[in-house]
Amino acid sequence: MTNLTPALPAAAASSSMLADWTRMLGTLCLLLATVWVGLLWLKGRNWFRSALDRRIRLRVEESRGLGNRSFLHLVSCGSQQFLVSSSPAGVSMIAELMPEESHSSGTPPEPTDFSQRLKEALPKVPAGRPVAP
Image (cartoon, rainbow, N blue to C red; front, side, top):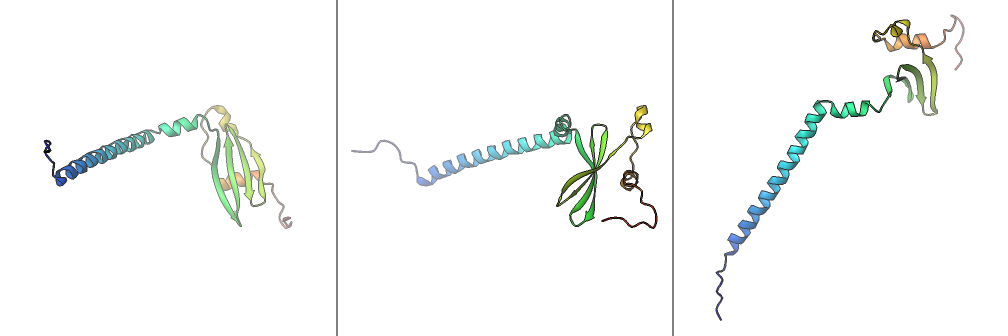
């Protein structure tokens, strides 16, 4: 009995297998790179942001730390603005900020300083009178 099929050397079979794996790995890397570049392109065009902005109306406009894990937040929901405090004890609304008259004329609001809005929202304490803790 003689074997009629020619025997392939072991080195030729392993190099063919190595070439197949290399080609498959290269194709996978090229596919992943194409998906990654596509996502970066969509992100650059603000596609993701505009899709989220249509659903989300609540925004934290500005935040300030007060120390000891306490914060003040200027939160807007649509055209309304709220001054909110947060601390380990909880979250509470300090004041609802009224829009200025210039906003109702249809012109876009000018950016205001956070400290100015805070002074407007907090009640005024007479001089010489101690502030209750």
